[in-house]
Image (tube, rainbow, N blue to C red; front, top):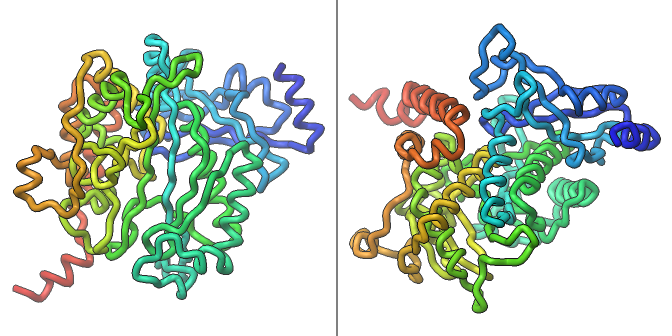
Length: 443
């Protein structure tokens, strides 16, 4: 089969393979491999020095120092913007065995655990992002100065103008050639902010698709002299960007078991929702894994004066002001942002949902009010627990969550927690411009 595919791609003038895997931070890594070495890439994999890759925890020497990325041929796509190159997503191996700290292998294990209950997670991912330009000093700014409405959501004029329209059109065409079914593209609630919606898939394919989306979005932006950014909160005075997960459960045969007959959730769906809410504080560390993430998930009024980000753990029917929104028989999980490692984020979702299902746990009562408008007393009366407000708080919640640590895997979780603790400490040691302006001459 590999030889047949190699000859097929060679006949299409493909000459190279971009062999990609994902590190613990959710960043694409890999090598360029000549197409004539495809068989080796499938059977043995491309070799990498393990200690050079974030989150693997491999030694500098010995038989376990080498990390191999083996091609998953099902994931192969010819790159529309680089047509002589085949993009293939890889799994991590060490000493010939599936490596437990490989994030794609971590998600595969979670998918297998769910399959043992004859269940499959279907995921729709909604990337929100900023499209910016950069000056000679490295400062980022909005490409279109006319994109300046106080409430720019769904602004068609800005959406259709100049570089932006050319970029979004190229992105849609590229994604379509990569196998995406793009449903819609819109201008979001900040200048230069956009969202692309494409059709859902099973958890592993959804994660792979998101990595393909990022690769294409970055490449096309660079070709036009633009900067594509999934940073959760690049501007203090503008709304941030989320990465909402639309979650539903089917049987392995494809029958929906998440929805009831009225647009709500079945009993199984409610159990799964309860699991997500139960583990929400720990999930935050994986779904909003950067210092900047918590500039988005703020309690009270943000500097932007407008936000769709959740700050409290709860759910409601079509209620966008909480961590979970139930709509059309599925769960929209609104905590994640684009800085997450999508493989780890979805593995954590599966294990949290499984815990709710295994325990037969029911979610708390739905909240049908606008939580953004609630007073602190009303929030306290409703017993709404806040999401973590800093990365440190989220990491502490994850480190205390024995179930998720064991289910996701100690190897990858030990590395993740250690790296994120170091990130938080580095941030705490940094002296910001805000501090200089506020304190330098004040005392």
